[in-house]
Image 1: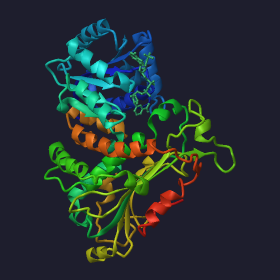
Image 2 (image 1 turned 45 degrees about the vertical axis):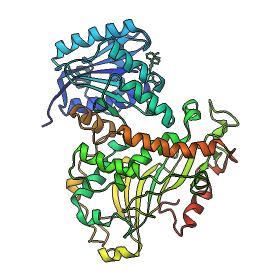
Image 3 (image 1 turned 90 degrees about the vertical axis):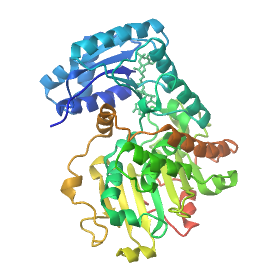
Image 4 (image 1 turned 135 degrees about the vertical axis):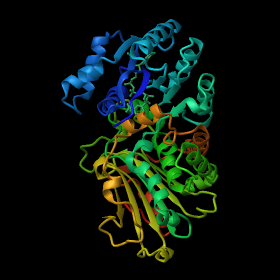
Length: 479
Ligand SMILES: NC(=O)c1ccc[n+]([C@@H]2O[C@H](COP(=O)([O-])OP(=O)(O)OC[C@H]3O[C@@H](n4cnc5c(N)ncnc54)[C@H](OP(=O)(O)O)[C@@H]3O)[C@@H](O)[C@H]2O)c1
């Protein structure tokens, strides 16, 4: 039986897309399992003048795709309150403080607070500063949850971090990276700790290369305006791909606790091999999608809210090297793009010939299939590991490991309530990731690309395959 948690959640951007698509369904799952029960309340804030009743009806609507238990949804929604609020108005924070204190008493929440920034990034600093100046913090715990993007360069991330840390200490800040909430990414760490043979295999002696692919089949859809300010390098590589590399490449942590795991992860980010502008040109490929072969899918430049001459990249492939004893000269090939043939998030670990010493067949590749969600599994040379004959890589029995696939937000929400920061990004990891990505961005900004350079529904520009072919390698997942 789940242990009940108590807190008042203040959601900035409570009327928005993220809150309705992700946060409310995740909280509802916690409600159904008893993690949230009697001692919690949620204050949704946004400018629009909604009533509590109307807000509750939107919360219920957001759950209808997941459940039809009307009584439970109704009861759950009674914990929700709406406060019309402009992030720039000090008086609104005073009203918010009053409401939060009242709900602390009404629901007996132990004065615990979760402040959730489901709002445009330009407001993160303003909100945090007002939480301080209007004295919203309590004598319970005060946890600040920040959605991506955390800055758009090292300098802007530093500025944001400085403004947040005037109010919240690093230990109170939870930077979301929902890939770290994904089931197979979390399993990777667990399996490494429990399977010594697998752990032993993860180093330059046995590994030819490691491939991380986060592909999408969709284009930018209705997010052209946002994408024009981001591009895939900032949107996927700086955060999700870097964090996955951290999880694969880190040394074995002394313990399965946040401090030990972040200690070894920090070393990975410290060891990112510096790039010269020439190395950016050699080791990184960018692309932008054109129409598909039938002309039925639009080119990126024809999407809504996109500049018809846009040079924003919708595809990136690159080779990342780490300056460490363990991973010397082992390429981490990374790739992310829109309008690729399928949505797939995967880590392919490609073994070299020496891995036969471990009892592996020559040319073995172990794949952690992260997405699509219902396909999460471990494959050995494309076959479910249990059916493969590679008995020396003994992964855990299915029933122990594959019985509960939690939605990433649900799992991360539990971590926030538990004060567990294992699956959140710390500042020192983030700053090194930004410094690395900034070098690529700056080099790209100096040169005009020849876009568009790949058709929709393809694996990206040819240069992405050539990048690996030059090293005598190839992408494991190729359409
Ligand atoms: N949506 C996603 O799937 C997703 C995924 C990852 C990260 N994120 C991040 O999550 C955050 C929210 O994204 P979203 O897609 O939910 O955006 P959204 O749908 O545009 O929601 C923005 C929210 O902010 C409120 N707001 C805007 N201006 C405000 C102001 N001056 N004062 C108070 N409230 C204000 C809006 O309500 P009013 O207009 O009524 O004020 C609305 O509730 C962003 O940082 C985004 O980058 C979103």
